[in-house]
Image (tube, rainbow, N blue to C red):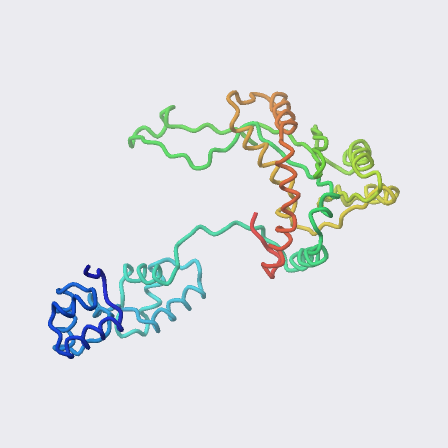
Length: 346
């Protein structure tokens, strides 16, 4: 049975050795198990070219960007990640004896493993707040899922009655720019919206409280005393619970701080780093509510219907959903530590 594909260097050596020992092509093929054509070809290549390697001869056009050129192109990428293909090609050709075209640049970049992608969106975080995020992550890097189960998460969110569909494209002729079928209507401030405050822990979903007006310290104090306090004392009767809130001005007001000091023997307020919504798992619950609102067969037409829909969706969130979010907290902390600058993507 003849062998398919290239022979190894050792096999080629056996073929040459057999022929030089006086064996015929047929005898060599029978002895080594290769086809007569293979025996003939290998021995001919050895006689004419002295070839004893299985490496194929290079063919095709010589690559215009060698290893040194790839290192140069890599430095250009590292210096400006947002450079266009035209800009990279222009900068590469400066000072080079042989210039390349944009197609060669594209091919070289792909060979090097580079692809043009949209960058991840991350919050703009000041240097001071980055340090605070890292400090928080280091202080809680040894917390297990059992530790995070003792945290109750809270936040506010606003849901608009009308959603923006982003950039919409239509087909029209030049004189149809004001045709009703070619227009997209807009409503100021999205037609109004509903603001809610909510909280949850690994054990259960907490209350979702509609906020009928702008949330100030007085209104937030009512929420804390009427909803946070009974939730924490019920879920954590051993006073081992942590209440999480962000650094909104109404959360840091003096009357709020004094209230928490009066109840510090019942639960602890988790010291939260500023500019860290990506660490708060309740943000993902807001996304769930938003997606469910958009997926409704009959969309709310007024704020009262919108509020009822939000409350209904919140109550229907599965236990597995919010428990999984709490269980992901160790990974979120590791992501901040791994980033070295305290900045992760949403």
